[in-house]
Image (cartoon, rainbow over all chains, first blue to last red; front, side, top):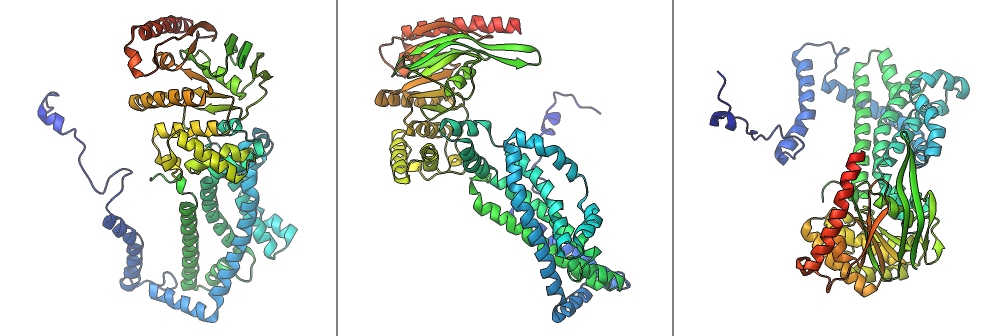
Length: 280
Length: 257
């Protein structure tokens, strides 16, 4: 039965109930936080272990954690996994650094000057929608099958996205701040280098962090096609010989390195841009 | 004349056609005066200040500072914006020094000047703080110090105390009056707060709305400048006169819109 809207019962039931787990956008207690983080990793590991131990699964279909660890030790002792990791890291490193080196100034210029933006945005917007792996046949045709096409692939995949993302961060520089600089006697170059750039630096670091993940994906794709070493190459060869445990080793190494870089960028952002953090 | 505005017109082209924002503005300001320009929203008062600062150019007419026409923004006209426009990654000291740094003043000299003006605004203790660690009133005092460090001919302020709570606003009023008396700088301030204008300035220009044009010029002669003057009957006369003036125009503007 519906209660009288004026009754006390209806009033009290409207009060927001207190909660610990479902707090929106608020800090949760530290022990709960740590517990949830551990669960996030430990629970899938536990499930994996349970399925492979109790489930009687064919190891060529799903190897157990112990199998994967063994495969890792095997690949480590022959030195293969180190060589593969170094090869992939080097490609990501060179390709990504080159892309960052060019895309950061281009993005800042596009964001700052509507003229540069009008000149480049249509082209970049178009290029962004061409998936970088679709360039592989062309890159092999033009650059062969050495390191150049792989690095160029990463460059293409990162440069356009990163330029446009850096451009967007410049939008958030308040117009007042730029005009204040003019009234203090700053010229346009000074404004660009000493006001706009420091203001967008946190945004640039964040854009790079996100696009490093794209670079990491592209290096694996490039190695699936033609390579003699590399983590992508390792996975594709292991697949051909049904060495499922080595596929898992490759995937886990890729994941760990990706996460490590992500955390590194987050740390870098925290220490270099203390002013941009929300907390006092 | 120190600041001379002659026959200034400003219009913007919009989709609906020409929008006249400022019409036939004439103002003469002497060195050392504290001038307030009051107007309702839509009177183009901020647009007027932007013409003086050189951030925008008049459609026709002329702004002269010390006999020289304004061609663009420059440090001879210190500007304080309504919203806090401090550089968030620089310390308070860094913010105050920044104008001199842009002008190529050597480090030692700009350190000294910045310290001096930080002392003037009473923020020496906060020199190494980041802007986000300061209250609203303190941020505006840093912005004022930053503008003063370049030793401008005139200080332009665009509703500088509009975002502050009433108590902070009152203390900022005392602060700016004290600063004006000590430095004898020329101040041109925009506000919609009539009481603020009567309290602070020695002359007020009232702008009508749409298009903005000077509807009245009032010289303020009050026996003293402090918050107690607000109880004085003369203060009330000035205030009521201006409020009536603006109220009438506000309604006109509404009727037109």
